[in-house]
Amino acid sequence: MKIMQFKKIITLIIFFSSLNTLAFASFESEENFVSDFAASAISILSDEGLNNNDKNIQFTDLVMSSIDMNLISKFVLSRYWKTASDQQKISYLNAFEEYFISSYANKLDQYSGEKIVIVSSEAAKKFVIVKSNIVRDGADTLKIELNWRLLTRDGQTKIIDLSIEGISLIVAQREEFQSFLSNNNESLDALINRLKIINAKD
Amino acid sequence: MKSKLVLFFVIITFVVSGCASVTKDQIVAENIATQKVSDPIEPINRVVFSFNNVFDKYAVRPVSILYRGILPEFVRNRIAYSLNNLSMPITTINNILQFEFGKAGISTARFVINSTIGILGFFDPASYFGLEADYEDFGQTLGVWGIPTGPYLILPFLGPSSPRDFTGLLSTSLLDPTYQVGNSANRDLFRSYRMGVGVINFRSENIEIFDDLQNNSVDYYAAVRSFYNQSRNSQVSDNLEVSPSINQDSLFNDFEEFELDDTYIGPDVSISYPE
Image 1 (cartoon, rainbow over the protein chains, first blue to last red):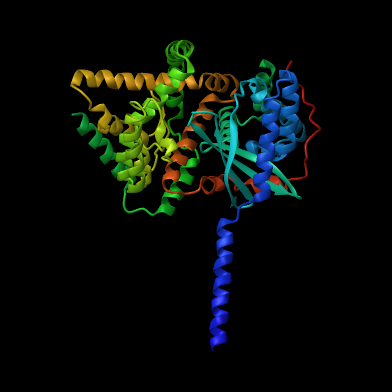
Image 2: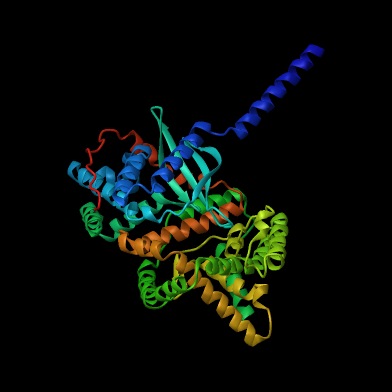
């Protein structure tokens, strides 16, 4: 009887301690992935030996090896991807990637010492969300919430989305594309042309 | 007269939403549902949006550039901090309306500390005492009470809003204790100062971001709409202590399909760098 009770207690303890670890499980490798990425990005951005063009090349290499560009491209196009012809897919992927790169290309010199501080991480369906803050040095107490949505496939962790103060960038991009398409007779060619026009401006 | 107007809007929102008791899950579900863009008067909104852009181009943006050009960063930061501090009393009121009494204590303490030690709110010593800033407005309170946002609305001069947020905005501007300082002439002056400087200060911090968004968006209107809706939803779900990732998860439901679609991997994209 006593042994039974003892066993029960042990089982309970094990049960609750495992619950506990579940509740507080942090995703160490994902957190490290983000802090490594941030460290590499900051070292490129703050390297005074690099001119803007070099910065751009190195930063783009870093970004392209850390994000899942293929998934992002398809996701923002949503249902229009499924009906696109192969030729449209090629044109779109090319135009979108160039558009994506040009969205930060001329802004890399605006970096002024901000740092990323990892706060916590949690599972969200198949994704892992790493929460962080962008903070500035010195007496400045203003901080910005930045959440990273990561997906690990075939042992490779990639960034899927950034959410800044609750605003998801790929969701915003998708809504923009969907709106453009529904206002332009659902023509994917029109979207591709629009992207090309914007890309040519830079 | 004005307070009757507010009461009217509050009643209307209650009636429209058919507000009974609503659970947290329902509110979250509602939030997720509203993330599917609801914009029935898009054509009218787009016209007002264009008008606001013209107003911005010829009035707000030039003044913001001037503001940023004339005032050093130190001064601009002091103004930003003092504006933040002035929004603490209305935050306290909303904390209480949201039954967040702990947070009400924090926002009160922040206001007291920053208005005194922080020299009229120009500095933020409260953050060093671990009292982190959190801003609440009446629109968020209505959201916490389970009142739906309603359709997207662009207000002339004021920009993106919704029936819920517009009601909140009216209530805030009438209920805010920091608007009740001094006699009526001073009050109006103070109110205009706060609103005017608030707008210019915000705009001056975002000149490049808006320029860039405007020049490089595929659909500028839709981009702003998405930013606004996402931001308001996330503020309300923050108040309900719902994790932002859970709030956004449903948006990623069709992700799987694309993930599985490995039939087409994409071309080797050659990247051309701008000179």
